[in-house]
Image 1 (cartoon, rainbow, N blue to C red):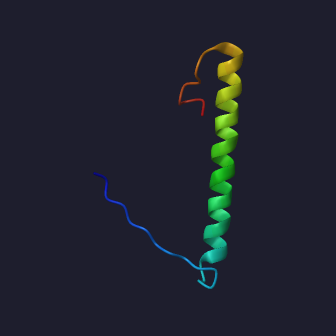
Image 2: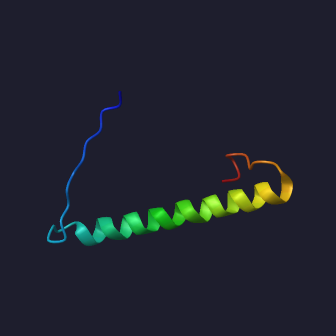
Image 3: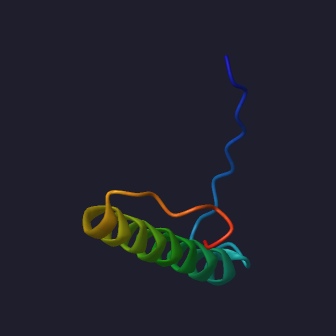
Length: 53
């Protein structure tokens, strides 16, 4: 079992804009990295080493 902690941040919270922006950028970084990994794999049938990422 893995313990987790959840914080509810509403739009009226002072950190809402900062956290919303950070989450948006994190999602885009993940998607861009996944795209590059998939493109490389389909082109070469090899995975990229972690040092390149």
